[in-house]
Image (tube, rainbow, N blue to C red; front, side, top):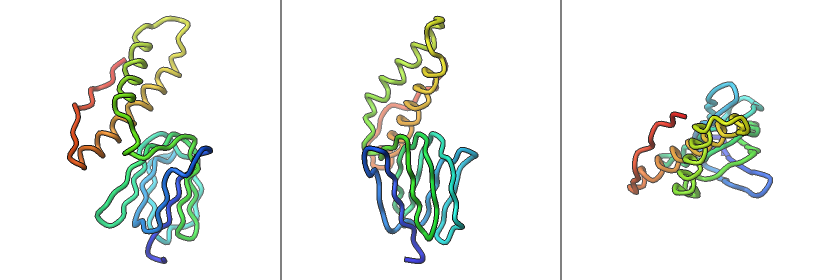
Amino acid sequence: MAGKLRVEVVTAERVVYQVDDADMVIAPGAEGTLGILPRHAPLVSLLSMGEMRVKRGREEDSLTIFGGFLEVANNVVRVLADVAERAEEIDLARAEEARQRALARLRERRADIDRRRAEMALRRSTIRLAVGRKRRARAGVGGPPLPEAQP
């Protein structure tokens, strides 16, 4: 299929996502957002934390990506992610609990708290909530708005 992209997202544990008919991939590259179209030049890039979107006609699939690599060659986009999940797999209640725990740890300001780890947990949970809520909004299943995360 010269006019379409094959997209594969895998982690060490499983194949998270796989399609043969993508029109565009938008991914969180380490140096900024990457946009991949069919016939893209070969590329290897580090990935950051964020949302990866795969456009297929009028459909759009969303995934959370937390680090890894992206490779593009011969209309194939391969993502080897440290952690990845499809938007529909996100447990919003669990993500909100994780966000609240991270915020509480950051507010404590104790010397024994690893602030960087708490900040990363806050960022991961905020990304999961945003992606999960966006997907549910598209599907007509709402939820409360995402509050601003101020430590």
